[in-house]
Image 1 (cartoon, helix red, strand yellow):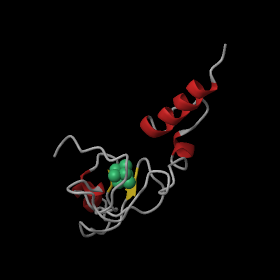
Image 2 (cartoon, protein in one colour):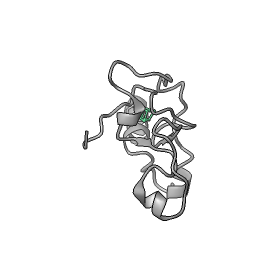
Image 3 (spheres, protein in one colour):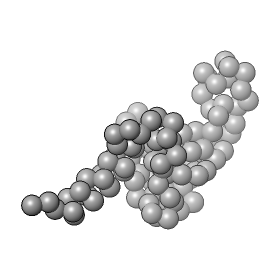
Length: 106
Ligand code: SF4
């Protein structure tokens, strides 16, 4: 007997933890399947000491790394809006959501 709740839970887990490991989903399409801010309770300020800039899913603005500098891209300030692997839209390094996962290098 099939259990629809288990299938729903499986899909939710796949979207939130693996990004989009669904069959037939290309990497390019996966980039458009980020979660809406409202779903993950995104806020534009930290929760205690937890903030996007310290989350493993945060993608800093272009030009943050030395690699970008070598490619001739302009550097940006550390407080510039970035993006997130999991959440759609521009993300503040001072923001926070329920998917916060500390970076391993901090
Ligand atoms: S997962 Fe949440 S806390 Fe982490 S960078 Fe993305 S929006 Fe910020």
